Amino acid sequence: MTTRESVESSLKGHALPYLGPRPLGSFKPEHIRDWLSKLMSAVPASSYRRVILAAFARSSSGFATS
Image (cartoon, rainbow, N blue to C red; front, side, top):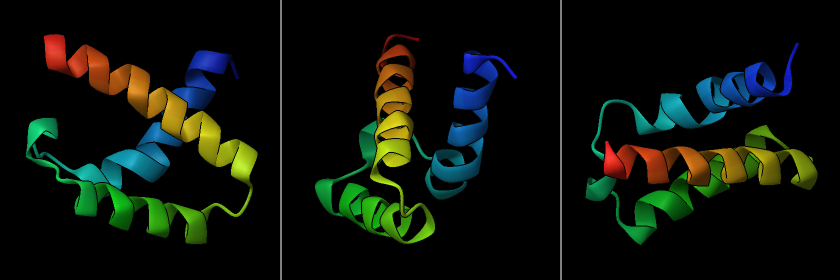
């Protein structure tokens, strides 16, 4: 599996199920805190959570310009 495939898999498994079809601009801080809390429960390894969050940050900046 390539790095890109691994990151896509992480996003599909941990970010997209929570985010769903909602526009990113509709999320408020409490929504992100709720997702992070769920992510901490589902993914105990902090290093893996950082990978997911970094991938989400890169993806969301691309979504905002699309």
